[in-house]
Amino acid sequence: MLQSSIYPKAYGVPSEYFFVIKFMFEPTPDLEETIKLTNIHLDINDRVKDNVKPVDRKLNKNEGILLNRSSEIKQHNILIYLENLKASVTGYIEYEFLDSSKNEGV
Image (tube, rainbow, N blue to C red; front, side):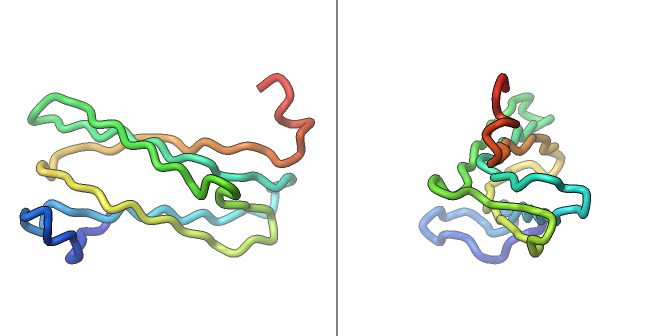
């Protein structure tokens, strides 16, 4: 996670509350099938306020991010507002195999 110096001025808050979460997707040689990354889900847990803010980011509705063993590194950035630097961020990435036989029963 990187602190951002760029933020929408209309928000009217200091830039130190905006962060960029950078996702780097690098395929491994053992990736046998082409996969499509479709969604990034984050849970931002503000330990001081004791609440969890969910964030869902759909990745390109039509294509998603496609990865196979010969793909170059791909990245996706999310600009996020956090008031508390002690917040923890967890989450997962949803994906699907483009080979329809892998998706059966999932």
